[in-house]
Image (cartoon, rainbow, N blue to C red):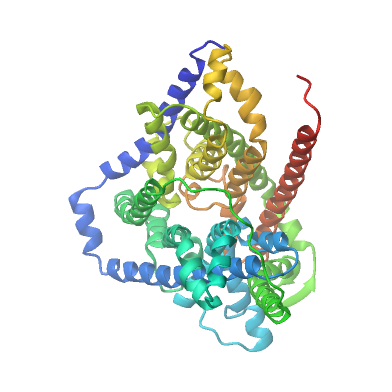
Length: 537
């Protein structure tokens, strides 16, 4: 490659992100007219929908964040065995679409639900309660991962000093643990609030007569082709995400350098506490797994609840109805999104993390972070308005492009953080020795961050398999993925089929996670081997 190849690639990447991130949002805002705003705000439905969205989101956010913190705290601060296994189990809900959580609750607690019939329960699922329960299942794993990671890096030295001063455990929790979790708590609240506020999968299944803004937007655009009204709702849904994005940027900019040298937390022996921890973790895990158990049960029954006999007829029916095409679409979209998305986001992170703070690098960093502030439903509508006349519109490649952008920021941050840990003087040394930047990327940085690359690939793949938000506005019969087959089958009252599709998506994602686990373990073993072998220099 020529010496300026890295600059050319960075320029092309900037142009690509400007077209796929900045342009659609600008087009969305340009579609709004005063009469559209007046029409939406004067509608008798608007303020009840806004109230429904805000109220259910606030309740679900509080429950999700509190539950996530308790789970992470119990795992990290007790002597329960197999901590990493518990951590993985509590992230399983992230491997199925949000609409599947809503469907799972309907299968369990609906009017003809399994638990409703089995235990004679009378739960008013459809409405606020159903939306909140489904939203908690869908969102709490994200907050759990944040808290779990932060608690692992707490410095035990502070707690030792507090113990010497005679401070009680409760006071230590209030004076040390909670303040140290402040940044993570804010991030978790913002992330969960944005996820729940902009999701239409759970409310679509469990909302009943309670309409939320995302469901209204979905029905207006998909059902009535009302793009102007959808654009107004899209901007409203965009506001909380933008506020969260700006608060997170401000919070990050105020953080100074912190020493990474900490003393691992030492946990005292307490059998009663540990027994309570096992009981709590098991109870939450069972409740969390009930919708998945419902999928597994109903996937192979003849007709629920009339005929509960075991059968493979549902599999045959889905195969005969063409599920193979949806399966191929999902795999193709997920593989291409993971491959291209990992490459684009990694190179963007390389440019910003391993170069000076030039205007182009700061612009690239900002645009790479911008998708965090754009909910999937808003991004999907923006793409409809921007690219309807582009030749790629209506193809698999358009779904790949929107998924890359939808999930771009988190993998970008993974790579950015990993690349930032390398010695800052490496570029100067390479320049002195006449080694090009692209050669450094291929020979030093990429091999040194291979585990991060694998995790980035996994992130893109899993989220592409489960997403229903952005792609729902862009699919047609030929390009529909598995996740969007769920509401279609539900509308046909083929609930056994919806359960089977949800189970299939979960199985595929679990298979990928297993592959990632073994690949990362192989990378770790190879790194250990390289460190112990004597240098050949």
